[in-house]
Length: 570
Image (tube, rainbow, N blue to C red; front, side, top):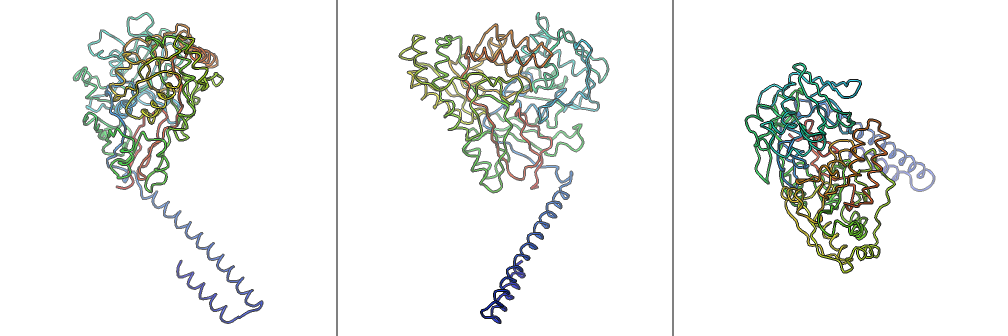
């Protein structure tokens, strides 16, 4: 390029020396400008062609063999609670178990159900008997065979309290399947193997989201041999069929997974090792990404997205919005048993200001316990607008003209729906002070936080939910049904509305989706009137990665599968 420009400038210089003044000079200068323009066009075309060729060559050079190997370090804000999928509900545990265990079906990035360990399924005309064809040639990490009997073994463990391996709370099973075996409302008639790789599940009543249940990470299929060997210690010795197998857990530091060398997907996964590194502080985690100590960062201050975008070698990722952030009242404690108090607090908190201050354009103020991205969301709910004077009136009407003292629980680590929990809690604390409520902030690490809130120790608590199935049932039933408000409760508001629970139960047992939608909208309206939560935000959580990380695609449900991820800098 420099040679071409050198020739050009010598040419112009020669023209200017030989032709001084007059039209002749003007014509030659015009001619030289035309030449320069043509040269630039030619150079640009050549440059683009070279780039395209280089890009094509790079793609061709990165063969399946080239993608193999390497260790990826995933930075996160908190440790897992446990690694036995049936006994955990928190996202930090699920992101591990989802890579170790596999379910019969799974949700893809578009939230569509896809085959996994089950390759085909069919239903009887009455919708009660389901037959599944299972994937053949699959091994558990301990070398034992995956088959229909293994699935039956897992179901018997989950549903039968008399089973010797039914150890733990199994929180998801009873509120999806109507209790356990022997309970009046238990959904399952039987689960049995009708062939080596054929499974039959018979239900007692039609259940619209039944297939979705089978895709939830909590129902990952564990090795029967491992369950027999480890018993209640399975949470520290997980053995599934997934792309990665458990290697080591250093509490509050790292969990190390290794490539499953016998994985049923040929050539997958690419990575040799996958390390989940706990770095509690958002700023420290970002610094670790910048210095190359970690390769992917999950959980960041929304305001730091600009830093990532401006830093060479880093890339910003955005997880599709599929969550809700809220503050729950403990309705079993005074004065939060009074709806006037709950509504007053909802009006006293400036949700719009919190979203503007702490989410950097990556969230919207929330109104409903269903995210807008999910069918059944009621967009017509009348929200609790920020109104300090009206909040004071409601509080006085409830008998608290001078306010009261209370506690506000918050987690110490970032969550997808609460990127800066302490700062958001402080903003809420400040707003409540305006109506005379003095709230002491109580913060603790993630596992303890979950334990204390599920046991009802809080008065008010920051919380949230990322969906694990694309059905309203998953947001409403676990978090708000009366049946899940007994200690240890997922419904930490201890909201025990018979009418609300009846509506969402009817929706669960209704096949027609239009009818289900109407029932869910009615339930949301009742929720709004009862105000068990202060709705805060629907978020699009930001993540960051080094640019040599390829194939990583954040999943809306936060259960990122790392099967296709590889490192291009090996």
